[in-house]
Image (cartoon, rainbow, N blue to C red; front, top):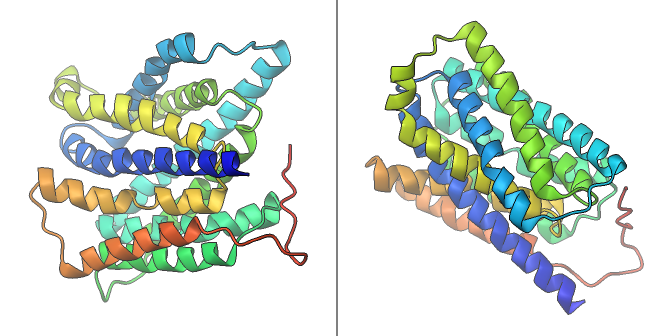
Length: 305
């Protein structure tokens, strides 16, 4: 029992590191957007992230890959890659239409609500009452951090909300598939699929020049090696022992670290309510880690293989 608790604590720490990297990636994406299109940026960084995992697999994941396991890894990784591509693409279009990254971040943050609901109905995962309270704290915190009052809900917001459904599917699917698949190989496959689809779209819809790619080299490198190669792998490894609902709440703190990164690197200032939001989100994380003693009336977890 104590060993499982330590595993969950370690997973939570790994997921928090993931959120920090993704938060500061907002800075890289903001700078990179001044030079290249969204498809080009995503395509290059996801392919870089996939390539960066090859030596990691060679040295740290010496799994005996049977033909059946290879097939399952390829299929599940490809499905996750489609979810990843769909979510990131719809989110980008939503942001472009609304012109309000804060509102888009808040709408995206609703995956903290959708994940436990999806995990309950699809994977039959038991959800602690403390987790539901933590979800409320996290969503309210995201509101204080990201939202401006008096905003309307337009078509761009609808696209962002649809993207949130794909983020939810991505998280739940990873929770299911990485239980039996080597997580780093799984990550490499989904990055290749997402990067390939993004590059195809970039060749069709965007003008790609070597000078623009060179100008955005630093953001691309961070986005590829850190935000993709390191962070998404940490997500896959971290979720191996973490329940999807607490994992989603922890990952939702990327908005907090995005605001911190913007303040430190880009000179953006956070309003007082932003700091209140940070406190609420971290309170949600703590609440989500509280596991009550199992009672006779509890719902069985029913892990699906």
